[in-house]
Image: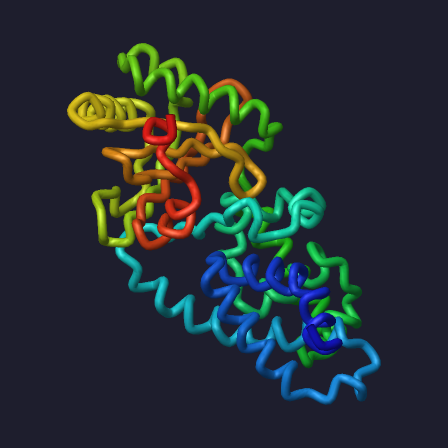
Length: 297
């Protein structure tokens, strides 16, 4: 490996982490890094005072252009849009531990409330610890403009943040109870798990069955999951808990195919919100490396 390639690889984890948080899909993040590498390969790196700053600047600006296009495309997405999860080894463990909360699906969804410019400024300053001056230089704007964008981003995120914040261990316990409830379903059992105003957001991408709008209320979700559980009696369904994007997730296989990945938010005692990813295209990377537990056994 030549020195220029080695230097790019040294900074690659940070560049991928930034691009993924900008775009919400690993594939798009990889495309951004590919374009950044091509520009890096054409650059005379001996002339650079700060290679990391150059790489982060290029990656951010490529991601910004791609995010602007993606926002237009997501307006025509069939039903709600959810980010695509990371596979465990797609970001270095040290970086996951350092910024695990900023990987969570609920946080990535909050970032969707921001303009592309606000998102970039917020991530550079708040998540990746660049000063306003450094972030401004990377974005090609004044330091005051960068401060304003970051401030507006904080305001939008505060307005839309989840009502509750609890340790992932609590989420895991509730997911374990939910998994058991789906194996031996009853309305009374599900009622003990769902908050009265629980919300479900599911993303099927128009390719599989999923709610086209968020569903609200425990009674509605109890009826839905009772129907799903009865369907599971007719097929071979298996479940497993797995850590994804800084939080526990429930993976469900149907007839050997990964069908759903589910994350929850909790009020500390019950499930307050469910995010269910069902789009086969977004599950493809995870499906390729995560076998059905029943088949593995």
